[in-house]
Length: 114
Image 1 (cartoon, rainbow, N blue to C red):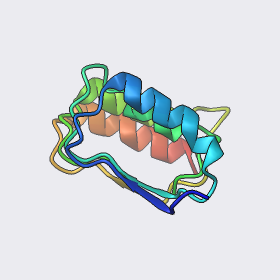
Image 2 (cartoon, helix red, strand yellow):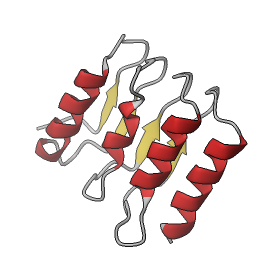
Image 3 (tube, rainbow, N blue to C red):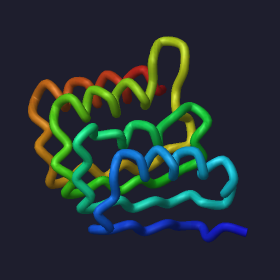
Image 4 (cartoon, rainbow, N blue to C red):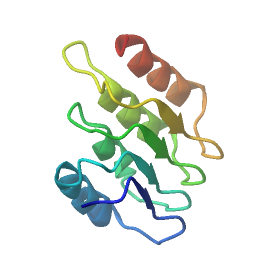
């Protein structure tokens, strides 16, 4: 049995650890809320948590220095013309380094996610 939420705030996670978490999520069907606030990843691999098969309803990614490239990856993970993440309800990206170009990528991912 898995808890409904996972909090990894300022846990000094690595991109590899996020990939392991992503691979573990299908085994924890009750895990709906994940907070990874304050974890700065060089490869900005947070988008791996937003696959079409993800059951997460809330993902908190505050203060992770996510830039425009990370926002592009997140926008693409939210949806493409052929697939979309249908379970995510809340995505917190506050206090990151996302500019206008990154915001446009997120908006495009949300637009296709209807």
